[in-house]
Image (tube, rainbow, N blue to C red; front, side, top):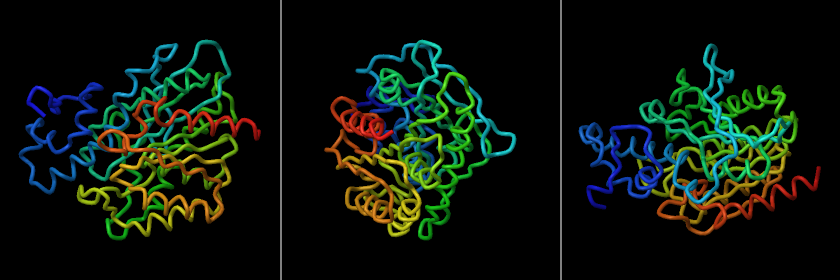
Length: 327
């Protein structure tokens, strides 16, 4: 990649093209950020991996998708952290509603700087898809991330002894606070919500499923998990067996229909591991559809940002249609 193609990582947020370049060519992006070059190799690699996880919240998928019908609105929503309000972006179709609601939840990182500098996520392609299907869509920014700030509540602990169940439950606390607040809004239906999550946000959505909140009709998880790319090594998880066991813990009580989508070239949670996790969740009693999609771009962990029509949209449409038919 030549110098002209490199993202200028000394400013935030990146535009759509730059975030796609960064996630596809993480190693080359090191040379684009002067402050990053002064870090040690170990810290640099870890931070870059964290940034690439977080950049999957806002990327190139929107270019081929129609924009939402109304301009987005910024909201402040009570969070599990006392005194901290979550910044959230609302997208909605025209009209007064009430509309069914989809809540899309971002990923996370153990690196503090990566979380603090996280731009406001939007998941433009997926957001536009839901709005085109008549949903209002909320994208919250949980405590410890970006503009929301405050304490980080979702730490997983030491890598070799990661508490993935606890970390996911902390993420679910933030999601549940959003669900409860939105259920009271007059333009939103108080039931039938769809909770969507990406990476750590998807893992939190699975943890939320274990609580069976009555407002939520279904869960959609894109590449869910925690602890991916240990020390930035592809296909290396901090504690894979702990991840599988935690999935079983969630599945034991989860009864909401759940769609789990992963890509064949996800190097954070590769197919062998994601299948084990999904099997554990389903084997413990969870209602789960697991779909392994073909390879997407340079890194399958960015599946949520891929062209929906060519990747996740047919699976999502079929799944939500089946959910509607059961109700």
